[in-house]
Length: 617
Image (cartoon, rainbow, N blue to C red):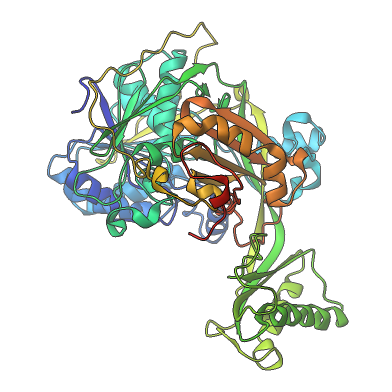
């Protein structure tokens, strides 16, 4: 049962490229949903939008969103009242709003109000600052500490991560559809909560709870079973449902999904998403509030309902984080499949031959990468077969360089291996690799006093409201306490349901833990959680900084470890491991799976004896 007084907020889009029909499907199943959020912008999305705007001044927003809005026209014509909040505006939220207004008018939808939230574009501010004080501390790359001056002339975009204030104001003034540029992902949910409950702007604990709720649903189906460690045993993965959070007035929430959809919401899926890309769990930074995940409590009620409570908050940073991008040349990547005895050795020799041939003509590259996929060598783990007897591999070669000509010559010469390479070379039906511009990510800071969120209302009748400043959060005050959810206990169900206890033989960390990973710039975030909470102490002893560093082949000084006792989990930051953007796993999504292959020599009580660890399962 839904707690009384809650606001129900769903998500039906996790990234630019997600399912276009998911929003309409969500509202067919949940027509009384209060708010629906849609997330379109990743770190480098703005650079893609900038290219589109260069070709067409009316572009610069996620055009897929217009199709989403068109799919909701029938819902609104039937009198549906769910209000939609999306960051699909990109670099041109006003243009996005105008396109939405047109498509709704064409569908005969009237009576709706569209709000445009902007003010996040700080490109000219950064350019001016870089010219006057190129070595300024606030402009330095947050990952590398490099000064902005070296790339300032190549900047393409720079957008501050705005918070929830202008979204809440838009809803306060009657907006049915809120379109923003760059805002922090959880702020889409926080804005809805601020409007619904009328919280004070400095009610840090409630804002912290809403931020956690937003974090849970911002990646769509990742909290309903998508990319879960135990995905193989997930029910009905062909129709995994998008998530809903029921947020209470105290900021606590229940995560769930529409009935009749696939996947599941369990203690495991919720915990996996909680540790996803959070950095320091004691200081999760957002423009709305600084959140501590350490006191969080997770309770699985069964029936795809999991309660999360206990978040605590404190004032947000004095600066906004800025996501900037700059041009850095061109890249190309291609693959060939090599089949037969000594496949990996043949593939690597073929790559060497290609680069030697190019070098003889004076063609070298700033960055190049050779990967032999399917053998375990990409992950750094031992291959399943002894060296020399691999019978197939996918050879992937990638290059990047400031010179377009160098990248073009690579793309042309790669296909020469079809006839000049090793026997058993195949998989070339897609032809020559395509050329792509390279955009690098530059995270930095800007004083929030220099950034003014703006809000503008548009009606479907063509009337235009006045542009106004979004309201700002009040100065830091004493935070109030945050009460936990109070529900009667229901049967506890989890995806794994203590299944690990039935294993007689253990081989890897996967048998006793689950994990999720992602990127934070050039760093990676890897969260690991014990399948049985009582094994947390063992997990802390087993997964030391030194052992994790050794497993990934990096220096221990580049590994940070944070403990989350309440979640029975550990969060690792692997510094600089994603510095090479040419790698297949450029966003670090696979690193958790690599860590789960860590071999065990001993394990926690109840999982068998030391003699059986590492035995074949």
